[in-house]
Length: 149
Image 1 (cartoon, rainbow, N blue to C red):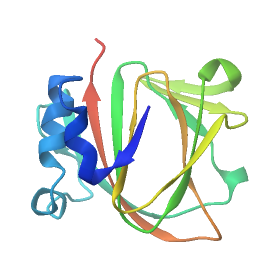
Image 2: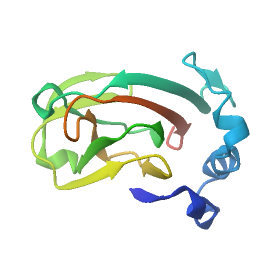
Image 3: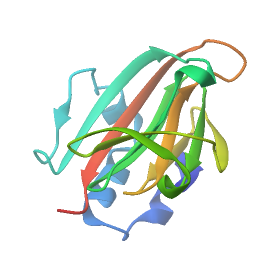
């Protein structure tokens, strides 16, 4: 997991070539063009989508993890709590393709706000969409990068 400020994104270049491409896209001109329909940048290897939703109470949310994809979450407006945990500490309740859904307790918690971004690697279980002080409208851009075949 990487949780950092957008202004420091270039510090993470060199980890993976597709992550480098995402870092190049973390600018206002590109991000403002991302819509709610998935935009394929390199087919299924790298794509991006904007999500607009209202955050939910903790009890209505769950953890998700992936084995093949790395996610980059960038908050455009609003704020949400994100919980992180190791999948081994959670209970798996659903699985389809590269989506694993879990229930359990958070080991780490962070606040995702505009100007910050979160990178979750394969195996990083993350619970998103958690309201901070109450329901809030958010807009978030999420990049998905295939890193494990």
